[in-house]
Length: 203
Image (cartoon, rainbow, N blue to C red; front, side, top):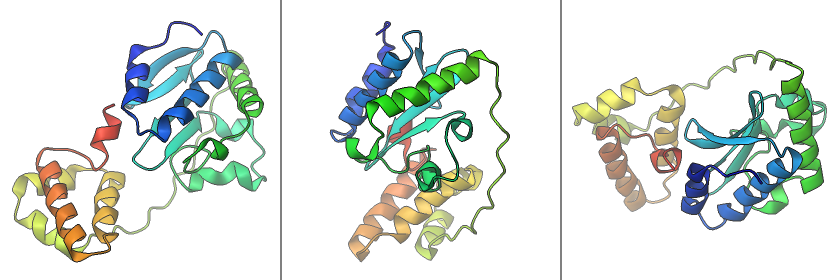
């Protein structure tokens, strides 16, 4: 393996215990498939480069993701297994264990195809914009934001995805105590200009 990027080492070290073997598995497969691959961080997440982006991985609180930049050119879209990008960021859905990943040979084959596309100068197809579902903000969050100008300003300036993360986090609380705790934490983070998943995006 070429000299690893120490930032990727740090990212993996800070990841949850369940995520470490997943990230290491992906990293090893990519390097075995392409000895000339370069590691870096893009958008705060480990990414692999070879004459452009090949793929990237990320770890969150309860799942990991893996995404190929030109995924639609690498797989048969008629295969239901190829459409897991509907479930989460990335192309393989929510990865919670090594069982959710393809066998290493299959993963390496995808990497090699991605390398060939980049070497041949094939551009990624333009993606159609998906229609966003209306954002439903819990009334408790709306009321709390009105009482904190900094938090309100951050929330208003956030993109749809960041707003949705906070709204769903509050709405999914199963008890009143949990909802109140999450609400207080959300307002604190928003007042500091932080997104819901700031801990993981800044690894």
